[in-house]
Length: 139
Image (cartoon, rainbow, N blue to C red; front, side, top):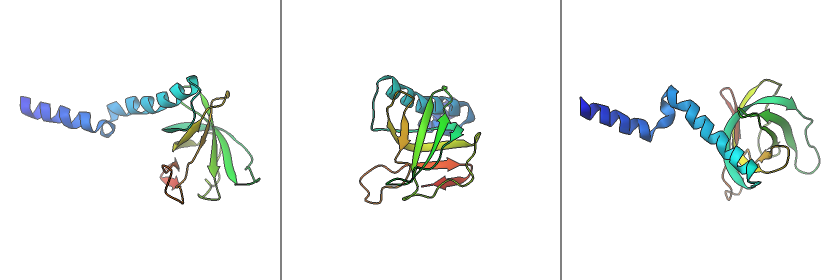
């Protein structure tokens, strides 16, 4: 019996996201990476997490086109998302209250930061990012 318990604990430690009780800790760790980068005024930090859309902004149509919106993270911090819609599909019908998970690159600014690189790098030199709403991935 002890062997089974030890094997389970080893499996659990290796795969913390599989069990519901650990999901909150994993999400909190992801968000703490953003909070740490913000407090340290760091940029070029690969991050992941999720938030709620608090405001949908007009698309940036000058130069490279971006779909822009503001996420409020569980910590209360806000994050401007600049999603390159020349390289990735836009999120259709995005609205306040939508839950978005993300992988991308964080850039510091005094208002909470900017998330970009939420797409695949067409040249394969940068870590790929993505946005997810429900079961749909935008990359």
